[in-house]
Image (cartoon, rainbow, N blue to C red; front, top):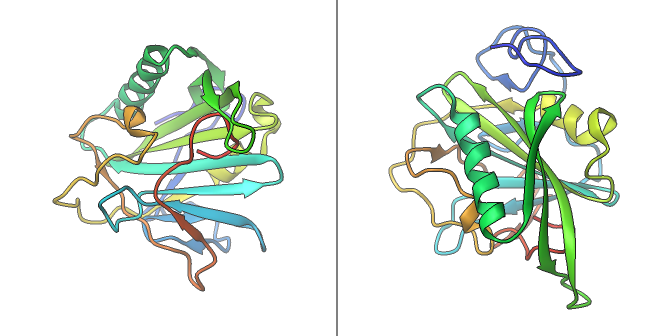
Length: 220
């Protein structure tokens, strides 16, 4: 499948995100999170998303300076899953009174969104901007949500390079779909998409959470 935009190339051949079974991916050192292999830098802050009433890790958030990038993958046996996920995400943002517009990004069509939320420390309501991009892979879909300062910086954003360097490791489809994370349930895709499960990085270098923190702060 080709990728449109500034990066160009064909996913799985010229560029990532990669499937672990694809032979052409660069042999770089990656942190093993189970369902995802990610290009973490030494000392980089990591949080894993654990839904309420579940002990299953379904997302990872990487923090670099004042930017945060959340990654989550799902098993998807039919084509066009990224379009479905993107459109569903946009519909829920609009339903919350926010703004979501489609635009061309380095990896094809993405979303630029704004949502009014409460800041964790000040309690004040403010608009939060974030970008949502993703792609389909062989039997999976990977979604990225980039938030924080400079969320609309475009192709120069480190989040795109991190996304491209990620490797998806599909496992057996879980029989139970975890509950939606608190504060983020409306952004989950259809129930026919089962999450690719993750785990805490080796050495316990991650802080576990009960799901993304409230809108309006830099965390998702």
